[in-house]
Length: 401
Ligand code: ADP
Image (cartoon, rainbow, N blue to C red; front, side):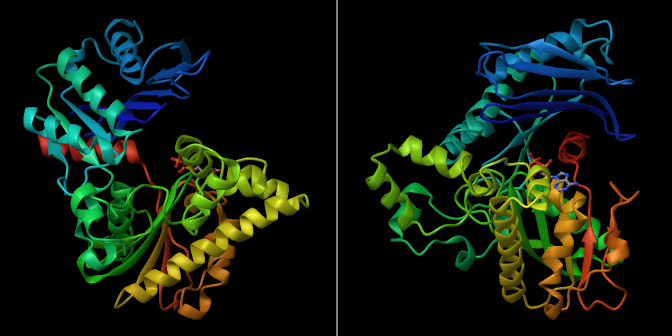
């Protein structure tokens, strides 16, 4: 089945066309900094995936999607002859609130409920919903599926999802912990169970999605019981540009001292903090590791803090579960950085998580799901390659098919 996967963010659009039967990619498109001067979209078609750049200056996120649909329809190199060949559309939705505990086929009722979830992720959900509406107009006979980042975490118990605030904020505003990266944690957990050759339901897992954004989840008997991200993706780990958890009193203190607005403070916490804020250099872990190697003290501090905060999160979920069988590493940093894995697990050996240095080595191993702990490590450590678009495509085809 040919599935169009649409992953719309506040100023980004990532799309892929996937033939789910053979897990074959037919098209990839990426637009970043949408709305900024000179913004463009990179589009590549199978089989050679030669990138072509399309200017999308002045376009909104759904308008970029409209341009992509035109290209798929009219470009002589398009892998499809007509948009009718697209049999289903999978839309990634950041926040599904308490309403959506699994992926759903989009109909009028669902669309109305999606609109109600917009206030939970005001930057991400509205453009995604706008893309769904555009696709309903352009491809009215093609079923659309919404796949939620939060759905996997709807199994968290109240003691994990409630904040110690007056209850009216939960009742009136829905303020609670929702988590994120749900499809990635679910997939990582299942792949780790496959590697161990054991049913997921029998295992206690700690899944670590360490990318530009990052979160760690405690998966007990196949369900999420706690995760580091909260009401928004700002809570939890230190990330590329997000602070992660800090003393909330810092927010009001800085606002008073600097006389800044809510929007400004929001930007500082989400865009100027984390690895970028501490290193003063870059949000990209590769740059910061390289600078630390060259003796840059701020870069070294950023890496130290990152590692320490990941270690503390893994330790806290070890305490939250009744048993831990496996820790799973996934996403950009988790999959690719043998150095950071080594540093993270060097501090966790006393809990029974013992890395095998040779297995941890990445040479020739990028993209290979594997166990990287020593044979008699009481808790196994795995690396799993995440592929968000492919997962959304397969989930969509399963629901539609
Ligand atoms: P996103 O959350 O945007 O999908 P990714 O999962 O692609 O991000 O992760 C991006 C992060 O992974 C960046 O910080 C990048 O530097 C880091 N990364 C990728 N490869 C490596 C590597 N070999 N060593 C260290 N960090 C890496």
